[in-house]
Image (cartoon, rainbow, N blue to C red; front, top):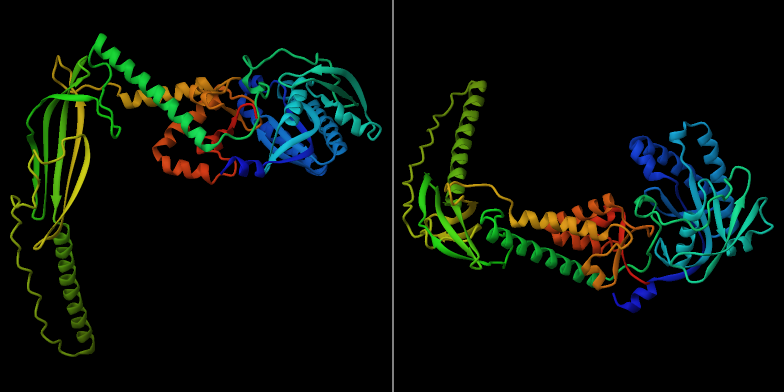
Amino acid sequence: MTATDERRDMKRKLTTIFCADVSGYSRMMGADEARTLVTLKEYREAIEGFIARHHGRVVSWSGDGLLAEFASVVEAVQCAAEVQRELKARNSSREEDLRMTFRIGINLGDVMADGDDIFGEGVNIAARLQQMASPGGILVSSPVYDQVRGKLSMGFAPLGNQSVKNIAGEVGIYAVTLEGVAPHTVPPVQPQRWRDDPQEAPPERTGKRGKLFRRGLAVLVDYMIVLCAVLAGALALNSSVEPTIVRMDLDVPFVDYGDIVERGSWREIASEVGEDARALKEERIVTYDYLGLFTQSYLQTRTRGEAAVEKMIRKEQAKADRERAIADAAEVEARAAEAGIPSPAVPAAPPAPPEPPAPLAAPAALPPADQATEDPGASVSFDYDEKDGLRVAGSYISEQLIDPKTGKPITRPSLDLLSLLLLVLYFTIAEMGRRGSTIGKNAFDLVVTREDGRPLSFPTALVRNLIKVLTSFILPVAILVVLFSRRRQGIHDRLAGTIVVKEGV
């Protein structure tokens, strides 16, 4: 999709933005996670009911945060007041540690709409007002106040023009004064709390979703940085401490940086020979040199086998035909006996002549050791013989690191496993908090946020990137999910409730 097409899909509209979240949500989750989630679910249903009654629309829920929009400014403010009164009544009948209070911010502004999503400065202002509101309170911007003044039976306390973070110019703010709504007692500009309470972190960034090409390049840059760092660290550890700290074999196509300096001969350790198939198990020791820094020896085990598939199928079919003929003859004899008719003599089916076993030393048999695959992994080959038909041959080689002191196989962390773990750790640390960007994403002006624009907490970033690394093993499927997702979200983004946006849009 071109930049012109993307601009065509983004439409602007004037709407009333309604933002709400739970005050002290992280503290409640830390005290009793299960009970907090039950209470949140109950209160969410109540809030959604009021929004629907006032002809509003829920744009998104992200954890304890709500983003909604209303066509009518009056309906939005009236809905907020009714929500706070209802929640206050519910809290009065609950134990203190189960009381849940919401802060609400309302703004009237021009936003960008992409399908069901809304973005832009109008959303940011509403989110800032919600953050500045007292628990159980409502703050509205001056455009909202101008529209509802004299139309609602509630008061508004002017708080003056306030500087709002990341918003150019000052914003006029009013607090709703109404019985059942908490008065505004907290200073309008509060200290940043994102470092101590990620769940209540203010929305730092919203914007247009990043283009897929830029996102792909950013991921490639990040993967290369981590893989190079892991490889350099493993080489340094094995060369300076002990050559067997990290297993250096890397099961990645087209990557081969170890030179074989010693290769033993294959030694047969087990075999199984049948009439139409056979298998052979062999082993040998191979020594690799890694950039002249150190060497590692591996015990390679190779399992080879072949089978005359078509011949085996023909034999099974012939056996089934004989059994069917015998069963048919027995059925004819039984029916004749029931009718009192002497049964005709049915000659027994002659047994199939035994076939001599195929000579396993024939050209179609297992390939010699020097012709079979030498690299770890699996290989399969097919051949056709005029007598036996289709034959299938396969080979599989596995490796185990050998302790140079004892000569026995040992278990060590592999370069593959370390790379996966450090990828998850790197992405998690880089994307959590206010920054929300890895080195690769930062190079292409991309950031990761939650769907409502707030930064990622550590658990959210960890879950997102663990799923991201795991789904890289099914890369074609993961790409298709992104392409056919309306919001251009991958599997990891959909499950974690996150989105990648272009910074500064």
